[in-house]
Amino acid sequence: MKIKQILSNVAEILGLADVVELVKSNVAINELHQNTNYRLLLRCASLVVANLATHYSEITHTQRVNTQINGRINFSVFEHPPTNIKMVRQITGERMRFRTFIDHIIVNQPGKFDVTFTYVPKIISGNETNPFPLPPAALEYGIMAEYAFLSGMFNEAQVWNEKFGEMIFASVKKNGRSVTMPRSF
Image 1 (cartoon, helix red, strand yellow):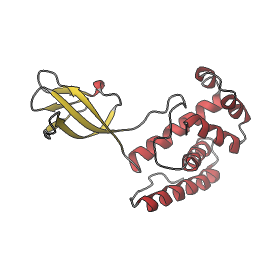
Image 2 (tube, rainbow, N blue to C red):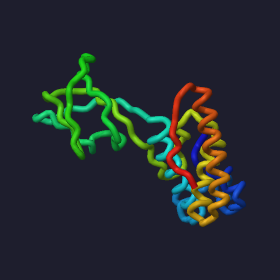
Image 3 (tube, helix red, strand yellow):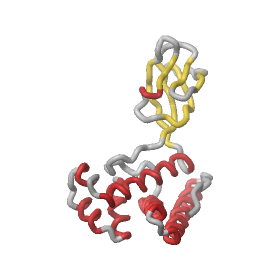
Image 4 (cartoon, rainbow, N blue to C red):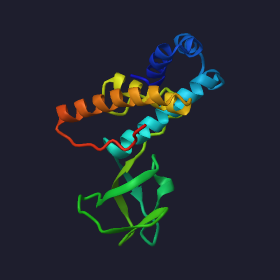
């Protein structure tokens, strides 16, 4: 499900009819971004996705890259900004040792490598799909909690955050994983 459909569901629950109408009318993304409520909900979705990607379910990606002469691989060459480099392998499959720096890694030799890393998906337009194996309602609850918190409705934020946590824990229990929810309102 696309994030903008999740945002439309949230807007309907929150009574933000302007957002619901814009999403249903399939207007261009730049027109959606002109709407203050849509931008706020999009920001809330971005916060929830970042929270989930760093505390619930790491999103990994493997990309083939070439090193520079000195074995340096700049993070800027990756499709997604990496948050943690998990592994570097030669294209033959052999694991390579590497050192991580603030904006690059160094491999012991130059060449082509498959680099596996984690990243936080960016929610920019709303056309992105839900990157987690969670029901849409889980993201909706998280977005409503963030929206309520940012709007100063702290009691409502706590209620939505509890529902969000319950959905995450139910999913974790179903999938046999463990999770620590970092934010408490």
